[in-house]
Amino acid sequence: GMGVCALLFSALAFANPERWQLNMTTGVTDTAGEVYRLHMITLWICVVIGIIVFGAMTVAMIKFRKSKGAKAEGWSHNTTAEIIWTVIPVLILV
Image 1 (cartoon, rainbow, N blue to C red):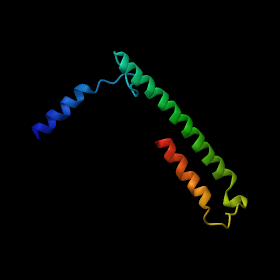
Image 2: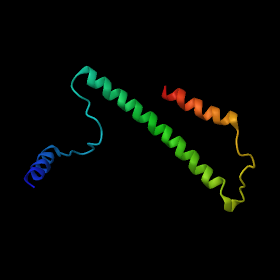
Image 3: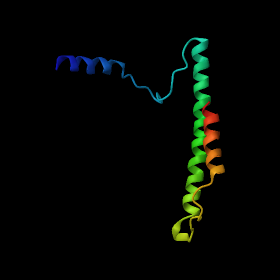
Image 4: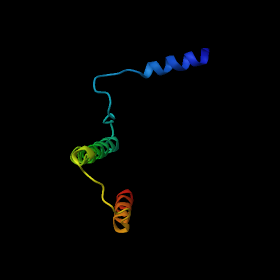
């Protein structure tokens, strides 16, 4: 009981919210500033990728609805396509 209360109240001491406190702080050293800049570049790259992916998904869902008469292709496997969409993400991750 007491230990849990002490833990909760000590955690509340660090809960010092400020407006827009959702991001990393810039830090005080040059290295911390570089880490912050790298983080922001990575964040915006992910935002752009997310917008492109969800935009393409939304367009595909609206344009190729079953109610609009869209029919799936008859083929089931395309080895070339499967290799491409496996190799490209692996290269990006590496």
